[in-house]
Image 1 (cartoon, rainbow, N blue to C red):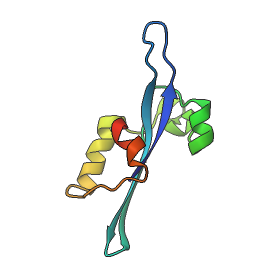
Image 2 (spheres, rainbow, N blue to C red):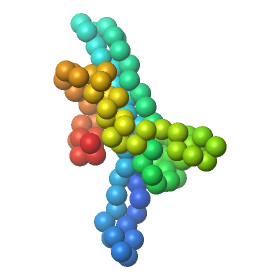
Image 3 (cartoon, rainbow, N blue to C red):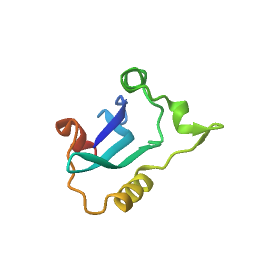
Amino acid sequence: MDIETTFQAGTPEAPEPKTYVISVGAVRLLNGTRREVFHTLVNPGVPVDAHSSKHNGIRTRDLLRDGVPDTPGGLGMLDEFLAQFPDAALVFHHAHFDVPHL
């Protein structure tokens, strides 16, 4: 499993920076063979920052269709993921970074 995120700097009103999930991908393996693939973009409700976009290639416009959100929000994505992988043991690509964002 791997996630991609975007970052929003703090403001005077809310000084703590925030990180938002914008993509989730997972693969189910059985005896080393790929059985299922899950991937979705996630609309965080904030623009994708330039640094994140440069790193992961995802832009704000990738999350929109005709200027309207076209990807699930966090809970919508979670429902889709759990329906496809209800009993899966999760192994993360970068667990030290990904797990705190879930």
